Image (cartoon, rainbow, N blue to C red; front, side, top):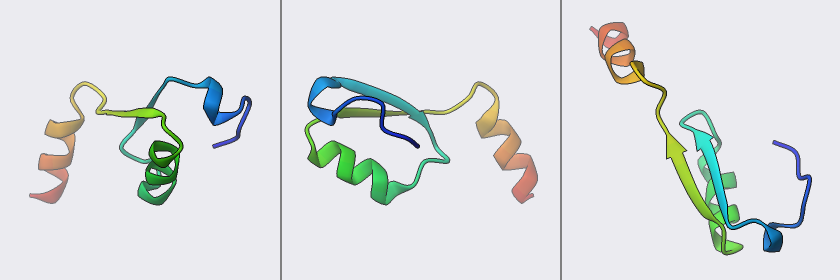
Length: 51
C-alpha cells in the first residue's frame, strides 16, 4: 500500500482480505473507517481449497 494523501483527508478505505491486519489497525487508529471486502465467490473458493 502506498500513501497518496494524509490519513486525515480520508474518510473510508475499502480493501480486501489480503491486507495486513497490523496496517488496517493503524489506519483505523488514525480515524479512518476501514472496510474489508470479500470478492464475490471468494468464500466458496476458500471452502473448496481447504477441503
